[in-house]
Amino acid sequence: MNRRNFIGIGLTVAASAAIPVNLSAVDFRKTKEKAWMEKDVSKAIKGLHGSSSTTEAKVKLKAPDIAENGAIVPITITSDLSATTVSLYQDSNPEAAVAIWTVPAGGVVDYSIRIKMQKTGTVTAVVQSDGKLYSAKKLVKVTKGGCGG
Image 1 (spheres, rainbow, N blue to C red):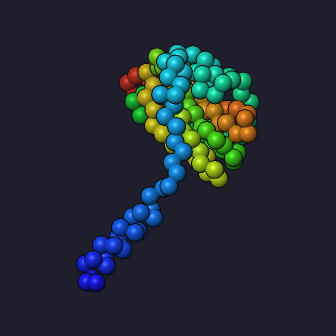
Image 2: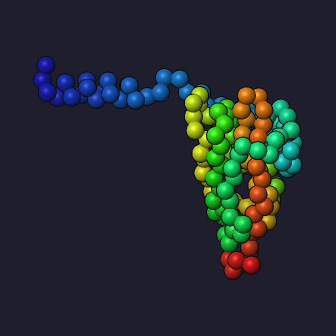
C-alpha cells in the first residue's frame, strides 16, 4: 500500500468517526407550525410545550436593560437544570416565538443569541426539565436613535 492510499483511508475513517451517529434535533417549525404564528407569548409557549404554566425559577436570562439597536439585542440563557428543551419568546414582534433548542442528554444550558426587536418588550426564556417548565423574563427597552434614553 502506498502512502497516499494509507493517508486517504485514514482521513476517511477519521471523518466517519467524527460524524454523529444519531441526531436528535426536531424541526419545531414543521412539527408545531401553529405555535410559530402565535402573537401572544403564553399561547406560543402552550403550542410548543403543551402548557403555558411556568415557574419563574432556576433560569437565568441575561439581556440589556436598554438596547440601543433593536436589530441586534444580545440574549443569554443559562440554567443548572438537566433540560430537554430551551425556548425563547418576545412580545414586541408580530410572532412571539423566537427560537427553540433541543438539549442533548447531559447537555449544558448555556445559549446565546442575538434577536431583533421592533420596540420595547419583554423577553421570556423557558427551560423544560422533567416535564416541568421554568422561566425567566426581562423587559428590554429599545431606543430608536441609539442615544440610550
